[in-house]
Length: 410
Image (tube, rainbow, N blue to C red):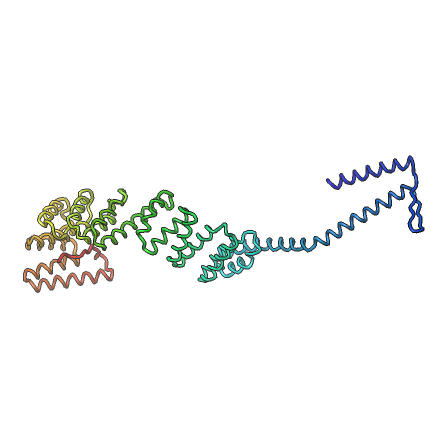
């Protein structure tokens, strides 16, 4: 369009000059150093036009020569970027198809020419990780950070994810703590941090970030409940081993109500109470739970309780027997409670019923101990042998030999 306008302008100018010269041709006289030249104005105009045209194209040629190196560099850079784009696509395909060495080589070689070097370096780091080349992985991550400092969060997330996958849990924690300083509450960062705490079994730190995990919906509801449950179970085990009842009680109050009635978690709570010698609290807690839901593990733990009032516990357990007359675990616990109350005949009766319904190593051990106390050494030895044989069969996985086993009171 611009060329057409210039052409029309020049054409109009030429027509105008032609009309002027037609009215008065005139002439021009030029003299220099004894030389003189005379010509018509029309001829002078033609020479001037030709001269200006030559000068214009000469200047354009000179400008093109001066710009040629820059144009060559720009062309080469453009070619390299096109090659880098093709290499990025090819590298991603190689990575997806399992050609990790080829992917790393392709992406790492063309990263500096790429319009997105960050992606090249991050994907190359993953390819190196999949080959077990963790030093090269770290070099790519360092290059990614130096190339794009504004993408520090993305680099740290990738680094932490790869470190976790490689089992470098402590390194991953250090990376994620730095990430939390730069971007507190980052959703994916919190997810990785939770996994890292699980890996190093730092349940106290995991407990601290549980509110953030819930508030930001970092995990699906089912997965979140599993994490919470596992965290509180491990914390109960740790606090129980510390031997402080007040710490266990304080922790239990922090357990969400929706989780408190879950069997596994409640059992760990009872065991933690027993580990801190809070026998009476454990006794009340077991009785409270069994009012609403029957659980044979808690029944066995109830029979293993020490101290307090064993006669009261025996009466309570016999009340349960009316509703669960064929429960071998309850019968075993009743036998133990009878032993504590020195009701030897009744204890033997309950043991016989329990072993008839479901033979168990614990039941035979309890029977052997009772017979030994009663002076029936041969029968006691037989009971011990039967319990040992049953335990061995269970260890090798024979069918029909699964039953709960808890330590017997001594």
